[in-house]
View (spheres, rainbow, N blue to C red):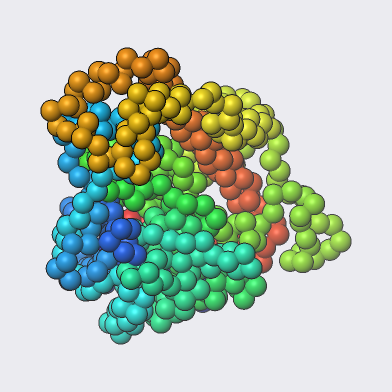
Length: 507
C-alpha cells in the first residue's frame, strides 16, 4: 500500500515517512510504482529460474497488494519472439545409452546439464533488459509520481563485481552483454522526486554494491542522498549469489525466500509460516528479510541498506570511536561485542532478536554462551568449509579408462570414442555389463558415490559457515545500532530511524 505524506518536524523527508512511523496507510490517491528488472545477458545466461521469479512476483502482487499500482517489467530480450530462455531438457527415467553415458564420464564429457531453449513467457513487458530502457523508464515514471507515492525496484538478473579501486560499483548485467553500474543507477534514481521513497529488492550476484545507493553518487564521502532509499540484497558486494538455474524445481534462492514469506509459500508452493514476527497480521519487508536470513539454505549473506548506514557511521569498538560530534574532552563509552549472546539481545530490536535466536538454535549456540563462542564457531566453520575437497583419494577414473583403452582401443580414443560402432543401441546393455567386469570398476563406482556424498557434506559445511556469518552480522548490528547516537550526528541518527521505518512497511 502506498503512503500518505503528512507534516512532522521541519524535514520534508521526515514528513514523507511520518505515516510509516504512525503505522497507518493511505487508501485512495497514492500509487505504488513497481519496476522489475529481470533476465540474463544472453540466451545462455537467461535461466528459467529468472522467469519463474518474475511470474511468482507478479502473482504475489495480484494476491497481496492493495491500492493503486503500476508495474513495469523489463526482461531479457523483451518482446522478441525468438527462443531466449534456457531450460533443463527432460531427462528419461532410464538412460537409453548407459555405456555411452559411462564413457562420457570417463572422458569428462558430461560436466554440463543438458539444456534446451524456448521463448520466455513473461508478460506484459515494457521491453528488453537494456540499460537505456531502464533509465528511460525511470525518467517516464518520475514525471507521473507525486508526494506520497512509492517506488519499488525488484531485480532478478545477473551481476558482476566492481573494480578493485571502486568495489561497491557493481553491475547489473543486461541483454546482449550490456550492463549498468550501481553508480549509474544511483544517478537514475536521482531523477525521481526527492519525496518519493524507494524500496529495492535485488537478487543478482554482487548486488550488495547497490546498497550504497543511499549515498550521493554511491560515495559515502559525499553524504546521504536527499531521497529516502532502502534495499534488501541477496548478497554482499564481493560475493556471488545463489540461484540462476535452468530448472525451476530447486528454488533455494533469495527471491523464493523473501517473496515467499509475503506470499505464505515458496515459489514452488511449499507453505511458509511464522513470518509475522510482530503479530500485526501482515508481513513487512523487514520480516521477509528476517525469514530469509534465518531459513535460507544458500551461500548468501544478505544485506540491508540500514546495515550499510550503521557500518559507515557507527562503531564496534572503543578504539574506533571519535568525539567529533560531542562537546567535552571525554569520548563516549561505547557498547561492545562482549558478554553473553543473551545480554546483547536485550539491547536489540524485535527483528534482530528473532534472527539471532533462530540462527543460534540452528547452530546449536546457547544464548548463555559468550559472544566469543560465536566468533570461534565461525572461524572453525570457515576452516572446515575451506578444507572441502582436500585430501580426496583418487577417483579411479584414470585406472578404469586405461583398462577400457587396453580392451577396447577405439573406446579409449579421446577424440573419436563416441563414433565407435561398439556404441550402437543394440550393444549398450551388453557393453556396459562388460565394462563393469573390469578390475577397476568397483573402486571407480565406490569413489563416485563417495564423491557425491562428500559434495553434499561440503555444501552443508559451507552453509553452516554462512549462517555463523549471518549471526555475527545480526549481533554486530545490535552493537552498531546502540552506539550510533553516541558517535554520529543527530541527522544521521534520524535518517537511520527513517530507514528502519521504511523497511518495516510492506505491500
